Length: 474
Image (cartoon, rainbow, N blue to C red; front, side, top):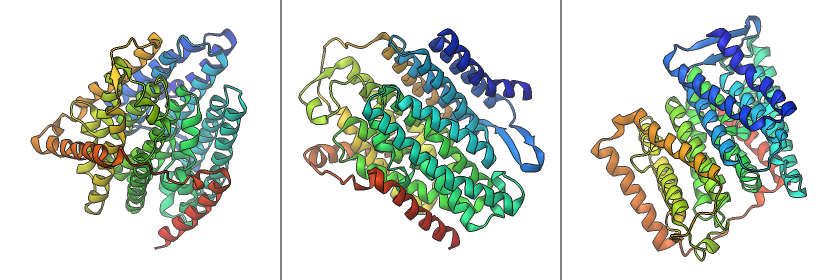
């Protein structure tokens, strides 16, 4: 298993350059995604594997069912994105970056030390930047540079924190946080919160995800932001004292993202703010965050891909231009899943998360669930008609893979199907739909975008650093 793991981690980087040289990008990229799917499924059958790379520095990899959920998400999302663009004119360079991004994300999901994670996150930033800037337009290059600058500043804070952890514990391992000073914890958490797009540290996310190409938006929201989430979950599970802090940021992120999403009139921006909210659900109950991450990755990728084939990004225009019924059906299925409707894995994920909340989280997370139902009612109640859906076959292959994944994953937590568990989300969804139809459908509130502006993002980081330091000290 050790040799297989090393080969699996190195495989995407080797294949990426081979694919670029011989213009076999899409085929090799799909092969890499299939290999990761097989490896992730193997993790659910095998005992946890720890690879100690450098004993004296605490540099190690951990492959267990928790990382298996995230790796499986990465594999399925990558495969769906490749199917989506199969008949496009994307070059071998584009697919090389997808393969490198895929391999770097897998590596980040396996790391349990701060220095290896730092390397993986930096490679992810470069690959993501190249994908965002791939169209080579002035707008895409600016969005990519904005993302890269914010990411690098966050990683600078993170690296200083990692050095302080080593200075205190003589190890880069996550468990070194127990001996680390408060400022180390604050710096590391700031970096991870920014990379994960969590709470106000994630306000760079809406513009980046909404303005990128559809396939890139799907990758960013489906898996890339989770490279900042899994380390936070690991820290919560390895160092019990950090669990309440991470849960608190989970609650804050779920409410913040939901508050913006319910008033958003742009489809891709709504999905981007929803990503912030759903990442909060993952952190709100770290012990079961893996299953929620899988569900969110599949459904959010599907929603971004579907949004990419809609005739407009504006909900106002979509109400005047009925969409083809076939597209509306898959849009409704994905919206049902993220709202917690039974028969898809979003239901089981929300029930499992709710059962693992602490008492002080319950009211806030129920409000966030209600806000999710209100937000996605905007998609569910769009007009539709029986026109031919003018989309490429690759779109249907991608959507079938993702929606099918949601249906199959539904059996993971079949114990959720009790009368009480079924009634509660149905009531929340019904209330959300009612609130949308009676109140929010006619509401035209435009929330300020001041904090999303580039020159304010670093200031937000500074405020978050002060807040984190105060929270750790108290």
